[in-house]
Length: 148
Image 1: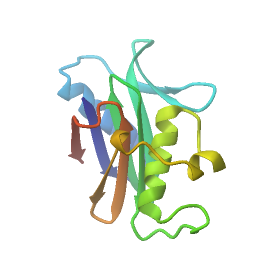
Image 2: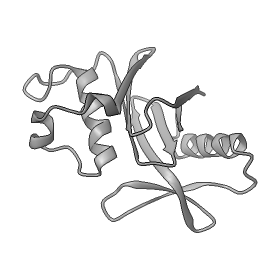
Image 3: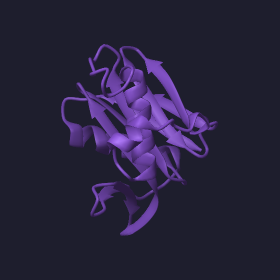
Image 4: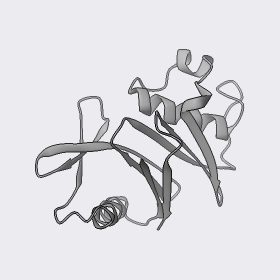
């Protein structure tokens, strides 16, 4: 299962803490979760000094999106009216799909990745108000979204 949390924020670090606290409560977990980053900048979910799951983080324009799963996961959120060069991709919806896939693979965005056909069966994209959110994972059919 993938848990996706979307929250407006003024302070990004506080919003991350609120989401991780909400996740802990939903899991009936008495401890606390926190995010560490590997050498490549990929976020990792930790508790009590041990990695305890997969996490992906994206933020734009005062909105934070976090995906938490037992399996590798990638997420991206963008305003639906954000302009993107058509030399990069067709539209901002497609860009969120590229970003989510790049985070899922851990390879990052590259010209090669932008040019290739993405595996459509791994990525879901939803519109939430003024935003597109894309999530990439092997278990994409089991996504629970919480708007905070």
